Length: 328
Ligand SMILES: Nc1ncnc2c1ncn2[C@@H]1O[C@H](COP(=O)(O)OP(=O)(O)OP(=O)(O)O)[C@@H](O)[C@H]1O
Ligand code: SF4
Ligand SMILES: [Mg+2]
Image (cartoon, rainbow, N blue to C red; front, side):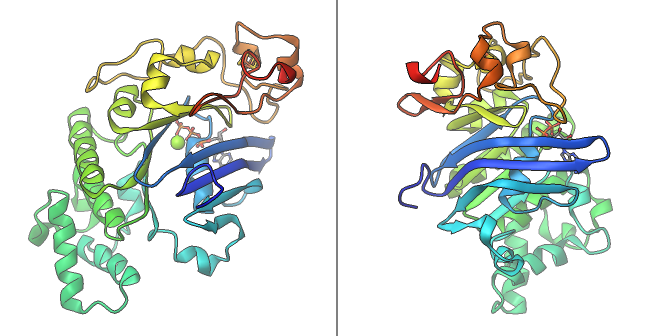
């Protein structure tokens, strides 16, 4: 995609609100993200900062009471937010596939696993013969380490959590997507199974050179899996850079707190907790949403909204401590 920050994905100023009885939740307040083909982007940030809503918005899956109130999502030369439902059907689950946190609830409980994968393959290759669909279903199940003969005939409730997540990975990869999104793909699983599934995912992404977005709370996983990291805080991208740079040289006061303890590769390391409370997004703080928790707050932080600026090549930050003198 010429003229964009990423040649596969460029999301700018993404805004999503939820209209609830409590008031309007300003969940996404101008998210900025981009990705080149073949890259792996990690999205990290505290619970409720908008990671899942962001990935749902990519696929235009924000439902009532939610609403995308602004922004642009460019993906593979298409502006997704302008497409019709029919046009989006040729993107969702095909060019852009998602692995969700709860695999069992993402599968249809009354259909056998083999049939569900087969249906997905038929959607992508409508001209494939029954035999081709059967063979490809078996290949996909074997690819994720499952015995295809046995598992094809299982219903979702007969699968363990780890097996169900393998099936979800097989489903997602069966369309050879241009972008694979994994939203906390292992957090519902036992710790030992988590490691196996992540290893499998990493191996497949590497082998097939997939472009991928991984949403995670685990900094060790982010360090191992990702090339780039976007740090989100209360509905904004506050820092975006390479994985090396974010671990060695985080600059946003929130990211500095998160990356205080640099995990060793392969070590599980949860997000650091940061003093103060996650803001209420019905009445978010004015200006920089981090200002009530920041130890560097200046008067402008309460008034102005710090834009994401390039501090050094490829390293972007949204904070008044950095950037042009004029913007301080
Ligand atoms: N369907 C919904 N209705 C109302 N509010 C919602 C809905 N979905 C998300 N939100 C709100 O949007 C904000 C962002 O939620 P989101 O699920 O994206 O967070 P997250 O970063 O994925 O958190 P977690 O790490 O816990 O998964 C939260 O304040 C949440 O309460
Ligand atoms: S803009 Fe101000 S309040 Fe926000 S992180 Fe930077 S210094 Fe802290
Ligand atoms: Mg989430």
